[in-house]
Length: 194
Image (tube, rainbow, N blue to C red):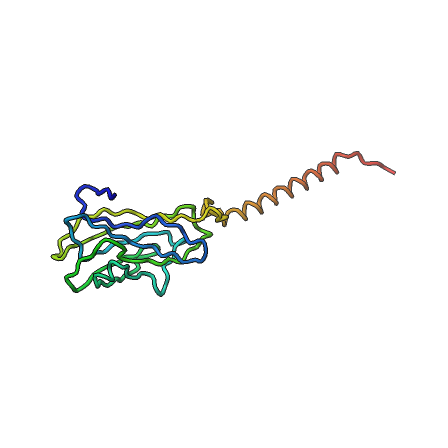
């Protein structure tokens, strides 16, 4: 059962998702749920995500969902910067949107940079009814769970570049200490004269 924010006429959200076990593409559904007694004819929203983990698929980045298709709405998007896009669902018709998927956003995944849970944030949502009157909304961010067998899951994102430097530094320190011990031992042995 949907819990509605005070005064909200609709909810726009991404559900919790699991990254696919195989392949590198995630289809993230953007869902619309309309409160009884309210109407939504069009909407726009921004999606914010970590661009080092999620890259918008170039050819089919944002596609209409079934609810948009059934209402004969068009879906378009525009990049606003790294890790942020604006999506608009609209139509030059008098058809209302129904509950369901309004858009599908396809991301190419970089599993090596992913933490066990990654967020895709919904922001700046504007929903309107047939007369263009704003419908108050309750937006919820989506979470993407990456497999626990991801060898880099949970590591600090900078650890990939720091770890080799740290390893090299440790080896150098070990070599210097070994050389110092050998030198010290050779100096502390009594010399025998012939």
